[in-house]
Image 1 (tube, rainbow, N blue to C red):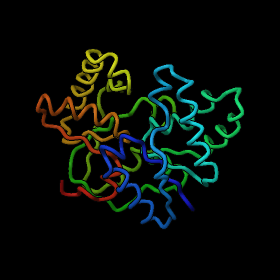
Image 2 (cartoon, rainbow, N blue to C red):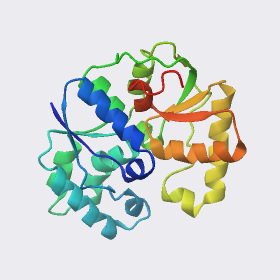
Image 3 (cartoon, rainbow, N blue to C red):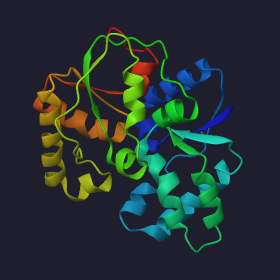
Amino acid sequence: MKITLFVPCFVDALHPQVAIAVVRILERLGHTLEVAEDLNCCGQPAFNSGCWAEARPVAARVLARLAGAEVVVVPSGSCGAMLRRFYPELLAGTALEPAARALAAKVFEFAEFLVDRLGVTELGARFPHRVTYHDGCHSLREMHIHRAPRALLARVRDLELVEMPQVVCCGFGGTFAVKFPMISTAMGEVKLAGARATGAEYLVSCDSSCLMHLQGLIDRQRLPLKTIHLAEILAGDKAGG
């Protein structure tokens, strides 16, 4: 299969190791990979801020670039939701609506793609640590992804997964954290309290944007907790970490 990888702008700029891990995994599985290096933002910040007129040209560029893709994999439930769930809404009633719906049908979040499209759960990874998993809001509520990342973690040798007592938002929300920093911080602290209650060493997610927010709070409070993207565990980059 020829896979087109859409790398979110925050991954490209701040967490390139996540994209590298995804590439390594998909190539190891024998697939041909194309990275859409000429794309960056999906337009979600403008969309979430209500600036739809500004978001549409960004979406149009993405649609034009990905029109010929066989399948598009996004290592982020947030940006994956933008391409699959919100482009048809953003472009409804315009000449680009059919293209938006065509793209939506072939967009997958990374963990979802491995488990639900490829039927892969075993990647030979080892991670001898206790971890807890954070469901990003867009992954869970917009893309309905819950089982896939847990199915992958269940097959990682020496990894112990302990679920948090409840599923709550981390408080990031992109521009929400900028507009309402005090609320965002308070929500993040609630999330971290739940993570620490599990006794986990690592907080794992498929969304680097959530992890970026939470790692900032962890660093400021000097908490004994680390964050890591699921792809980094599965690629085996930090087996002894």
